[in-house]
Amino acid sequence: MVGSSARLRPGYRRVDGRKTRGERKRQEITEATLRVIERDGVAGVSHRTVAREAGASAASVTYHFATLDELLVDTLVWSAERLAAQVRDLIETSRIKGGRPAGAVAEMLAEALGPERARTMAQYELYLLAARRPALRPAARLWLDVLASLGRQPDEVGFRAFLAAVDGVLVQGLIDDEPPTAAELLPVVEHLLEPLR
Image 1 (cartoon, rainbow, N blue to C red):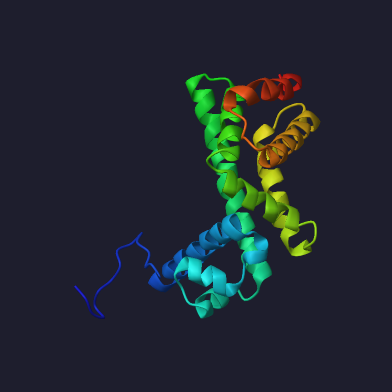
Image 2: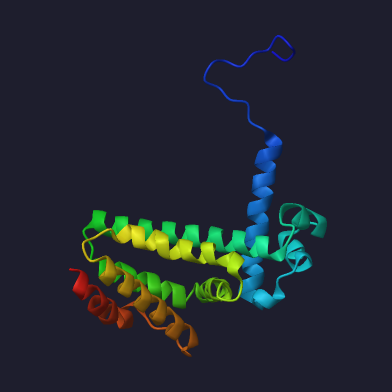
């Protein structure tokens, strides 16, 4: 029943549709920003190019992200959180299935350098931009912090060295003419994981 006498039952919350729509629009803009970076690099990001990619007005993009730095920070955080969640899921699935972690990591790297190459390049471009733009640094460190938290093992230094080596493998793979396969990456990953066993 609608009207002033209508009451919410205990335990129910009223949902603010405007807030939900606003959050959804921010995410659409963030995803569009990453697509622009995949295609044109960070240099191609402007409120207009992102608006065009998102199918929104430039005013809408500016409303949600007043500056390009805000837009890039949000995109880097969203991207880092998604990537960390994928890695977490991959590791957990590998453990549940009784698979070898090295095989799961090799497959993830092959995917990042093959079908997801443009996305990986965009993420690294954002990641490296943090060296020049201090506003991006906390978001760039988030990726390392989340991955380091997955390791929580006796050899924290060894795990950080492993993460640094994985970064190197990805950067080298991005400049190769042909992306490496999971089978080619497996011995490298096994060697990197050896000290952590």
